[in-house]
Image 1: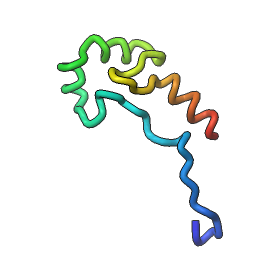
Image 2: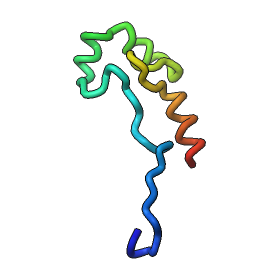
Image 3: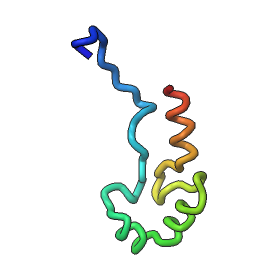
Length: 67
């Protein structure tokens, strides 16, 4: 940014996906602890991870709005 004379901004809409209760777990651990929820998440972009995570549809809307 400095080389181009631009200001650095943090854009909250471009943050990483919130995986709720799955944060910090491996895929295997999620499968073991939340198998049915994981199956639903893999089957639909509208399904959210356990514990308040974001669905991919929600992430897509958030990113599109930020863009």
